[in-house]
Length: 352
Image (cartoon, rainbow, N blue to C red; front, side, top):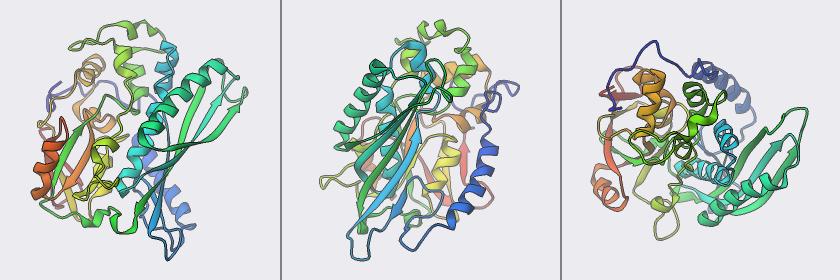
């Protein structure tokens, strides 16, 4: 698909696949109000960000940043293909990308694996990916929990959740309020779906009923559909680190484009009163997304609400710093800019 082309408004939606983004957003408002009661003066970050920033002490030069997430139903694809060596990479890289928006780099990682029965080979494959991703990131894999819960998980069911803690120097915390109108948004390409939207994908292709479709060659690609869907979540740490080991000083905002797409994630890293004007025609949507949309007859807007659509990380920088980023990161492109917010919309998707 080329962004902006109309889909079928009667096509499949995320809600049809069992995921109601609007209901989730409403529930999170209530959850955040309850969590707010627990926050003390040592909590630096505002609610709604990607990672929580904690000040461990008044005299500390280094702050702690934490986040947690799961692989989601991408696990179903791994199960259908009996390939579990990359799932660990998915969750580590996802968590790394979620603390980077605060300016943090990873310190240590913990995992939770819940399964119906103890399977030594399965666990070894999962740990292979976890270990490799942590090694690449210079992050200690301290351990975690492996829970055998046959009353909760059934047959070959398992779940994989990650917990990460990183650090950032006090004077290098990235804050949304540092962004201003006129800053530009540089897009960094995703490696695929990353770890979001798989419930809809499984519905579109009927994978739970007939997994043989995963062996089909993806139109416009040389890989099978299954290979493309299992492509690991990309870590943006290697291209965002400077010579001192921190996140590039030029960065004013990092929007990790996960569940909810650009509409949910970019506003989380820009100042109140600003909107992100993103031209969805500024990049070519990868073949995988186009194939999903055609097969499911999915509307353009729904695609951008569910998937990253090829834009994995939105980097906000001053216009004067954009050329440095564009010249140093392969595949980066100018995706948009920040403008004063004039209505309710925090993201203006031009061409959609």
